[in-house]
Image (cartoon, rainbow, N blue to C red; front, top):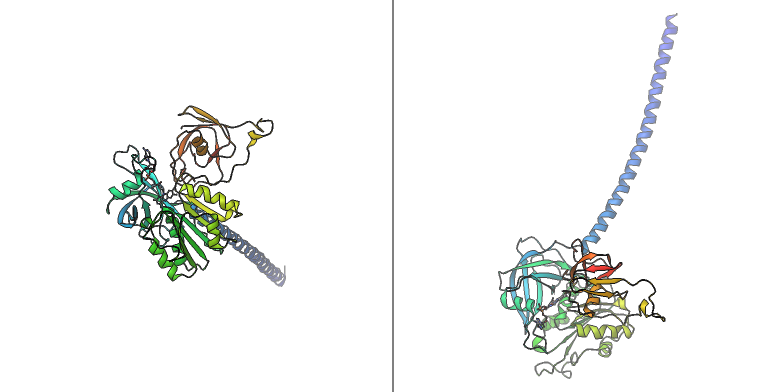
Length: 427
Ligand SMILES: Cc1cc2nc3c(=O)[nH]c(=O)nc-3n(C[C@H](O)[C@H](O)[C@H](O)COP(=O)(O)OP(=O)(O)OC[C@H]3O[C@@H](n4cnc5c(N)ncnc54)[C@H](O)[C@@H]3O)c2cc1C
Ligand code: FES
């Protein structure tokens, strides 16, 4: 074969190879560009997912316990606020910064009272605005014996805190909890209504309004027995002097010659607070209520407010003891005309007491037990403290809202648990 023909074929072969290689690398780079676009898309989606996940867990941590169980604190300082009312400033033994809390939340205390076989659990609201990462503050009233039993022992937990504890002593404290909290995003005028020592969570709320310069109108109403027992009075007056959106009203149920009279100061009243007096102060309208006080005050005032037309969702409340603030119950299925139940009623067996009750289709286990005279230890009655935890031997329960307190396997929180099958509990 002629050399020129051979060279022609070799040259054509080389050119074809170069062309094929160029084509292949073009195809490869198109694929590579597609792949990296896809990878970018995927990582953007992944990022979005991660952001969403982080958002959810951040929201969740707001309601999660800041620490599990009980953390050791040292009593740093004890300050007298009024007759039988004392503030306790506590700092963590581990000296790690304290987590923030929502204004209105409380701490749980496991008190080891000498002579008591079991530690006593008591809740105390944080009585200052959040922000101090070194110390928490609570304010406690020493509870006297009931008026009709003057010989009975005074309140165990509050007496222990008042009389036996001194700065430097240790306390076991569970993390801030509770859903009775200030809604900072609600622009409506707020009515803070406190009865006696029920003022503590509301102090945390009003301090927050002032610290954060929240401009909404605030009516702060505190009903107390007399001036001697009036904690935080000077503090509130100072706040009202500095912040024109805060209006104070005090109600003294006992005649007190040392207290200002209504003629000297129209914001000082004698007698009890009721819905009519409340409406006179606020003028009514679309208001947001935060109420905390003793059970009798809550039992009367909240249903009366609702009856006067205030929507239930506009009232947040917390009772420091057993209170029943619900409106009258709607008739249950066993009240039907022929008296026969609409469906098979659920049974609650209280094993220790050897009693069985038919569930009324609305009440938590603790309320059923209370009404039947079956004793279950309780404190917050709102799923926050864990005091009412009882062993669930058989059956299942549900919770309308996820309780704050941790629940031991095989147990339930009687104050908020409702049965969904027949149940057997140890009580
Ligand atoms: C969410 C929440 C927040 C709270 N925040 C605060 C707060 O900020 N400040 C505050 O001071 N409190 C607060 N409390 C109330 C607090 O938790 C306690 O319930 C309160 O201190 C009373 O507890 P105690 O141990 O002193 O009384 P207890 O020992 O429980 O006694 C209660 C009453 O029973 C009487 N009693 C006791 N033994 C007998 C007997 N054998 N016979 C007859 N009567 C008897 C006592 O004399 C007393 O009157 C809060 C409660 C809750 C649920
Ligand atoms: S009484 Fe506090 S969780 Fe039930």
